[in-house]
Image (cartoon, rainbow, N blue to C red; front, side, top):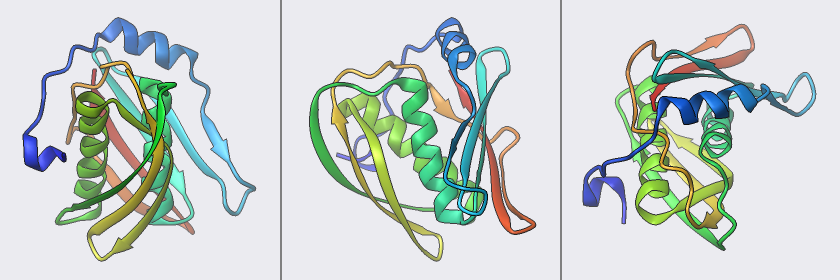
Length: 165
């Protein structure tokens, strides 16, 4: 079941829970200087700003999934593989749609990806997500458009998105 099929569900996250998670999270970095992908959380009273960086657009979207899993927790349940497809009218909105779909899957199905492979075909994202199904925290209420950005800076791609928690 996808978010588009079932609509959005209500969540019950709290700002205190997000603050605890944000306070406990160090910026994530993987890879060497050329291939490094990074994410960082910043708290904004009831919101969490997520900053992402990678060498490619697809890398930024993959890193967004890693960061979301870090924020909501990885359930210890059964392993699953999901094929996910989302589209949008531009890259910033594609990031919002991607994260919204992952939040929906966590909320409704208890699925949290541990590893994703993202392919972009224009403004269509096709992903294979390997993860676990369990009981992740219902922390993220919505992925917002506030301060949304996704752009090339030098030879890297950077994005910013705010999550309502």
